[in-house]
Length: 344
Ligand SMILES: NC(=O)c1ccc[n+]([C@@H]2O[C@H](COP(=O)([O-])OP(=O)(O)OC[C@H]3O[C@@H](n4cnc5c(N)ncnc54)[C@H](OP(=O)(O)O)[C@@H]3O)[C@@H](O)[C@H]2O)c1
Image (cartoon, rainbow, N blue to C red; front, side, top):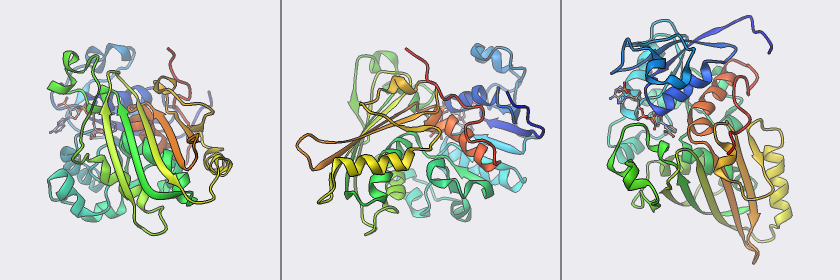
């Protein structure tokens, strides 16, 4: 492995949740980002490995706050992140935030979808929405990167090429399935084993918080500026993974060959987002930063169906955060990131 001369001190806030501990796993063998601090509320002073034995060899204990790091990965619930991130920025640190606290550009959307008045609208303006496939040029200057949600990552990667090339009508259905780790580590009745095992159900039918985010990112690609988006998430009994099945009507004259060409051009050189020739499985991405995209046209013609799969905790969260940070520091984009999935 290539040796890098300069190193950057990195921290994870907090390391006790699913997103946080996945960041710790990825950063623990990153050749440039040196993990110097992992914070917690409830486990200050506890060795990280005593809570997470899978990380044997990591010599760090949970701390109460960030003291030394120049780069901070924040993996907190939105309302904790919205308070913490401005403080970290004011201390001169660069921040990659996994929460939704800085993803939406319109402050009023927080009142409507998150039920709080956003306290830092100026920071909303400057935050870079961290989908590297479409934000590469803005990441090197960013002080704050707002990493996309797991469902929005899958949906936007599936649909952006078709919308940008005006191949489809701006009337889209995103039918998405997620594993249970998408809901975080805190136990709730719906994620209890006996409730979720051997069960599948839709949720958020009256409006899921990822709707305004998907809508924001896809609307900017529509020439008319008007998008009709239906997004229905489902919970399925698996630990990790998202499968997004997206439907839209093709514009007159658009053929399967044109669709294929547009997607090939969009993702030919991408390190993680790959076009595949058959319907992808969530298992293909397990533990990796990959997103597989499969565009097809229905056999009776007229409708585009795009499938995308990813691991919600890697490309949908921690892996994408590290990918963004690599671009922020002008490092190879795939540095320290898994490009192969675990199988079976
Ligand atoms: N899970 C996913 O697939 C996924 C994907 C993309 C983005 N995200 C986003 O990433 C963030 C973390 O999600 P997660 O799934 O890792 O959640 P999680 O497993 O529930 O972990 C939440 C973390 O936040 C801390 N925390 C909880 N309430 C807090 C509070 N009021 N003040 C300070 N710290 C608090 C917890 O620390 P203690 O244990 O010390 O209390 C824990 O470390 C969320 O914003 C989520 O939306 C998650």
